[in-house]
Image (cartoon, rainbow, N blue to C red; front, side, top):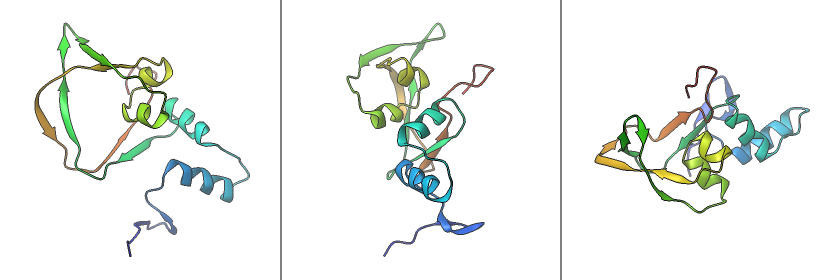
Length: 127
């Protein structure tokens, strides 16, 4: 049997839940009705932060740049919102810009299995 990590402030609430589980929790515990697409929209506008949990270790590559511009390579042909969310770019999702950035150099290992990121820029143009 697997042990589910729980939040110390609320022992009945798991620390990690999927977006669908979050929708169920909100709809069961509040008077508000939300949908999967609504939570994704809140994340895109920066109202909530989604953390992505990876089963295996994260490995990064440096993005190729030329004169402060990202060098674009291939295009990805997908309409799958989960695949699009994996790119963690609001421009990619909102504008349906399906180009991928070129990469270079050695792989950069990451020590954690979870990564939290804002999917939208704040008022200063930062993520």
